[in-house]
Amino acid sequence: MSELSELYQQVILDHNKKPRNFHKLENANRMAEGYNPLCGDHLNVYLQVEDDQVRDVSFEGSGCAISKASASMMTQAVKGKSKQEAEQLFNEFHRMATGELDEESEPNQLGKLTIFAGVRDFPARVKCATLSWHTMHAALNDQDKVSTE
Ligand code: ZN
Image 1 (cartoon, rainbow, N blue to C red):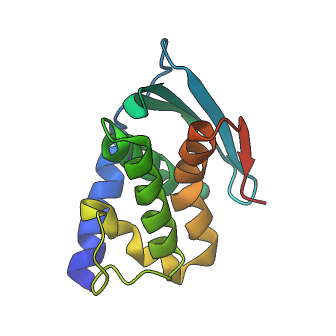
Image 2: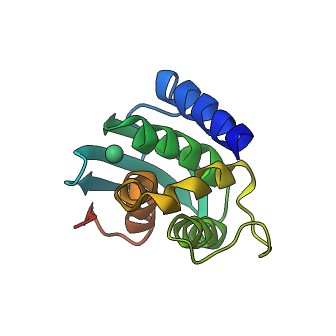
């Protein structure tokens, strides 16, 4: 467990310092804004979707280390995926973060995203970790705003 939390901290720190795909996507054709008033996390997710495939994805905004690291890893995870695969990842990530999915026993596609499993013990942090995922999901489904409230 301490090993896991060490890995967790390293990954969070790394992605927070050097967030991946952290910019506005100029040729985006979907975009949504996510807000978590509980923590103050506020970010935009941009998608370029063509032929039901996420060709490109990016985010920008501000928030705590967890929300930013999670957004950074979300963009890496869904880039190049089909819309359906991205939705499945959203579903699995959300269920893992809220404790519905046991990543150890249930087959899933989460890979290194499972480092966020620990947030399920901290309800306020669940919203930080899932914000970018909810926002990506909203953008995929042509909604332009999402709030965790
Ligand atoms: Zn937060």
